Image 1: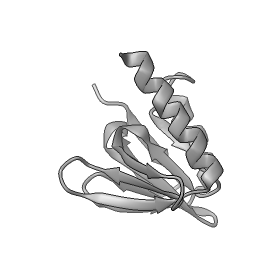
Image 2: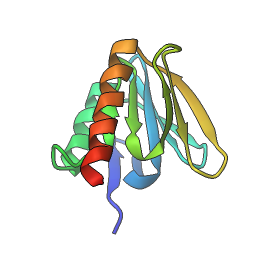
Image 3: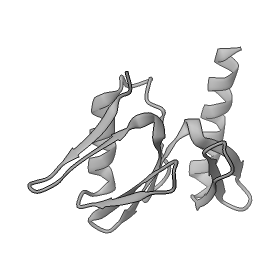
Length: 123
């Protein structure tokens, strides 16, 4: 059974299965949620509110989502490539759709280390 990220406002309801939510970006008081099919939806919540909402659906160390800086949340299941020197992270739906996002060197360095340690724990 998929976990749905549900965002409800006075006049709208958005439900996205967490396993297809690739990333979230901020735009002032709004956030855009992007799914693996390339669709996006703008909601009137700040990124911190989205981060808190996502946190409600997962136990603290079980969330596939990570915040990278002020304006980006990514789903680790879609991380394809991290280039710290170019300050980019490439996300992929594993079917030919790729998206490059920028993040600080510090955020990418920490995230790369976290993903590496996660990979070693699975072996």
